[in-house]
Image (cartoon, rainbow over all chains, first blue to last red; front, side, top):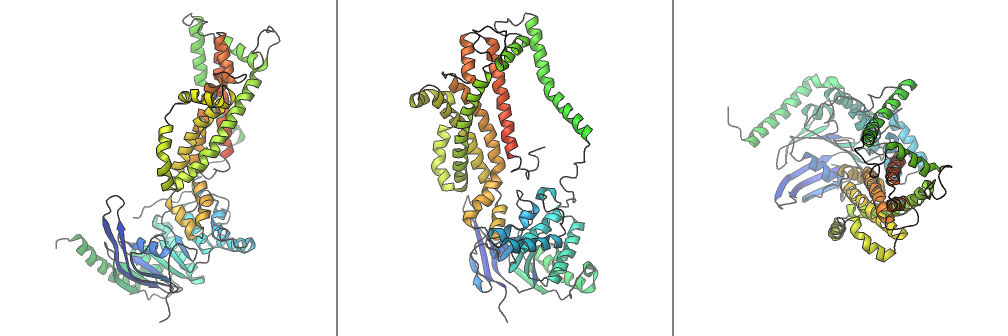
Length: 265
Length: 288
């Protein structure tokens, strides 16, 4: 098999609490791969460490053990080859929408002509024409996340890392964003790691889903989503979708019961 | 966690206002701002007229207004011996230059040191104890030392203004840098910002609102320290005018001097805020 775009092998992460120095095991032996052009969803309950996996791949956190590779090379710190879309909006509030979008190429010293043309295209793709000179606080949540995605795509990253990017949006906006993202991947697919706790979202978007367990986070199930693309929202009611969802829910249910040590009712 | 937040842009409430409503709204604001001063002046006039306040201690508002007019614009009818007539511009100019001098030194020192302390925990632990001991020493306690160091008057005053304005600016800047959201730093890093670029691209713009807040507090202290310094004896300046007026027992002039310093201080604050308007137009709620 060809080398994966991103390979996480036997990743462990132990946090030491700042005050007491007490050690908390956040991740235990996590192994995942992301191939080029593939959306991989990491699905799990709150606090299972799924965001920590993303933060290690992003280079914000150091692995306590195991290896994390991008194109076969170890990841040592954050860089423009791995674009991150955060759950909470992390646009620079002091920069206009346009200035946010061109920030990446500009800070890396790319020629102006090149990124101006690209920005023009992405402003169209994210549907924010006319908002170039607005500031982030003047935009709605969905608009802000689209700008955040455009800002990252401007750097043409090897892999896109999305940490529950639509988690703070209302259901309708989230559905619109799902459609938009599916369209975007139809025209320009790239490797992506998508963190979510929403089963529907994971199956709808992903080529593969990893289900994680809580504390310490481990991979419980790997599931290939064999629903053909292009996908639209009507996939959500298809039989194949339901079957996959049942499989995921069954896995989650067993695990949640075990974790909570619930008595048999 | 899924928080359902409706898609409402931040500026939806701002409806276009016609010119007349704008003018009316402005007049309303002016009226509200002047209501309390008007009441105070009315009470003051009543107290003087009824004899409750002896004019030696507190002259009437009208007498103060007359003196203010004479002090600011001069008065052809005033006797030649009247040294203060029309001298406001001279005093105000000298005082403003002193404040500007001491305050700009404080901004340069406070902002640059504050940025460094905010960025480096090590440096902060090294410097902070000294700062925290020096900070509570009142400006009046610095007076004797500053007179010995800088002599009576001008340079000592500038030193006091610097000291008074320095600490609020330093502390606000340090806090502002320390409170910069990690998300912005991480966002900048993953977009390709180097450690060196982070300072100007993230830490400085993100802490600008705090720096402005510190500068406003610092500027207020600058005017306080100006008067403290000038009262020790300088040739010109609003503080020295007040000190001279006390020698002559001119209560009306003391009050005029106090009010004018207050007004200039207010105007200087508005200038600073205005200066930051463009740089901070991104910050919702700061300018409304």
